[in-house]
Length: 187
Image (cartoon, rainbow, N blue to C red; front, side, top):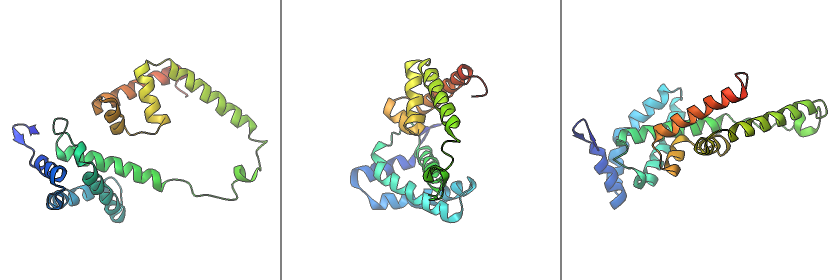
């Protein structure tokens, strides 16, 4: 990809990984981006061990998905850091899941009757939200459902819809603004 008149030297490296399954090319990519991505992840709050773990996931994704790189859309560096960001988010989601508590009142049946009003209110909120989503344009509604109901990343939505990533983000942001207005600021 040309960027300010310069050719992205790593686009050729990615091409060799795709065409030749070149481990040498992959090692070159790893040697260049590995320390940089690890530093980036640590600046995002990851410990050294977490950054190393996420870095391994990033590099594995690069190896497996090298054929999806499009030099017309971004530089290799932009692509690598986007993957790193998404893998970091995935790692945070996995690590922040609540542990199973066998004594949780919801699992033992305690306080179930006391919480009936909470369940009724939640059901009403879900109904209000579904009606509000229906007021969106079909495209916005689809993007919101993909992002929040199907828990897809903006990058994967962009891939599936063939829209630029920035367009996906801005349309989701506009849809959320519309939903806030429709539901009221306290929603």
